[in-house]
Length: 266
Image (cartoon, rainbow, N blue to C red):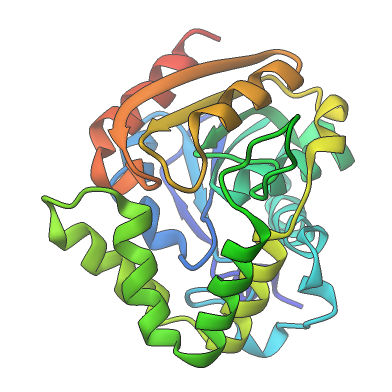
């Protein structure tokens, strides 16, 4: 199988070190278009789509394989193996942060650093000890909406996640991204994402990590960033001024600068 075609892999630039960018739920590699190419003058830059997203080969989607985040971490490792990457920096947005963490535990030699943008190890609240931002009823209703009215779900979810009400074009773009997904695949990925619990693996992550925590993030609140920083060895917590869950769209300059500054300090 041609992994590079399966996952619609794009390679930009050149350099001694490679940056791999992973997209979050409901999106594809285009979400990084304002940030990733800016690294191509000094790094080799790799973008890809998880199977089921973007221009990946949809006929390779297996509901059993992608019934957990393990299937998505396998996609990431497949791409890195196909390109023979070692000591790469993985930049993961949202659920891709935990996918990258899982992959780094399995093959630590592939990873030099992890950069987590808007990460969460657990979206559901587990009170009193853990606040993830969502009650189970919230997620159940979200999944039911996806089942009954997929376009309605996309138009509801996009502005709530983007959190930039004065910039309608941002939520419109996100809505188009959401709505363009295969509804069956998107709903399963949503279920896998929002019901996942990666808290028990955090202690196994040995790769130094930058946590980029956004302001007013309805998907990954401030408490989640604090929790990750406490439980990830060798982590750096960096609070952004960017609002919402998609700083690579709403504040690409800040997103680039925060990542670049972190990597420059290595």
